[in-house]
Image (cartoon, rainbow, N blue to C red):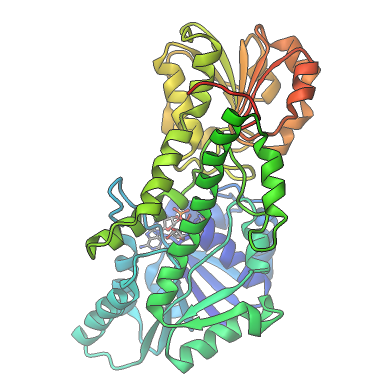
Length: 446
Ligand SMILES: NC(=O)c1ccc[n+]([C@@H]2O[C@H](COP(=O)([O-])OP(=O)(O)OC[C@H]3O[C@@H](n4cnc5c(N)ncnc54)[C@H](O)[C@@H]3O)[C@@H](O)[C@H]2O)c1
């Protein structure tokens, strides 16, 4: 099948490469010509495991092509996916400019029937808006062909985007149009083993809301566990044991129960804010989600609080090795990353920071810039050199390669502030290092 994809970001590029691997003829367009030029030369604009190889083999096989020419992308596909960014501001207002721009372009350039699919996460009613923009453009030039608009939200996780595209838990198709449903069912066939279970067809508005509800549920689980972590600190329980204890219950399941330094990333916070606003517009306050957000905002400050406690308020002049900047391992995405909050607070308090991330250094530098007291370090061990203490914000597996003995040797006042509960407290302490985790059974004042 011929497929056009608008947006070569974390989702668009991963999806494009997987569709090409599955035998579709994919043309992937982006509004950023530099990104497209780079991709044509094999330069990856983002870090995602397995993606570079997959893109290279798609290009070599001729099944994956890139273009900055929107007209070419409007003409190529039988199915056209809108996978552009939909940022939300602090009030949860979603910026649909890019989605609408693609809809208008398709309306201007398309000369035959088409199925347009909204994959970007966007408020309920966006597909109808896309349809009306498209229809307006088509009728303005007297075009009569059929253009259907469906919704197909994406649930992949950064860091395992390729795996998630190849093996989706489920594919949600929002459409009442048998032609659209049939086309999308065929397109996804290579990724679906059990259609009865994995293929969910519903109306467009429900599909749009499903995406927000999924992210809101995931955010809720994390904030819930962060709240339980606070209880654990006060009652002398270990949240890691509690997590295993409740995760083994089939009604609850083990996923997304990690207490930590707060959730980040391009989706959870943005989508929770957008959903809250969507409901408020209809006069309905989402009380659970307001609490989820508030808990997360507070949690992003937790490591700094622990350090303030450890240093009895005297953080100025201390040097902190900061391991992990990306919002999660295996990505270079810095959007809404908890590391940004810790870094800003440390610098504002007069501390020095020696920061390292295996993949997100360039993106972090672009956001934070060069600052007094901040040193970017090429490796995790380099960040330890001359530091007083270590803060770990992202659980990159590579950090395990630096043993506790080395950490104890390098730190001047050995202490680990473990924002992801990566370490075993007893082992850390046996190595002569003070340990602070999240909800690990010790009462640490807030
Ligand atoms: N990142 C995730 O983990 C994830 C998961 C599920 C859903 N989503 C949703 O998918 C959408 C895309 O997210 P992302 O993380 O891939 O975003 P991104 O910012 O990584 O990529 C978006 C790309 O779209 C391009 N673009 C903007 N306007 C365009 C236009 N008119 N024509 C062609 N390209 C255009 C941008 O240049 C950019 O390269 C968002 O709505 C997001 O909420 C993201």
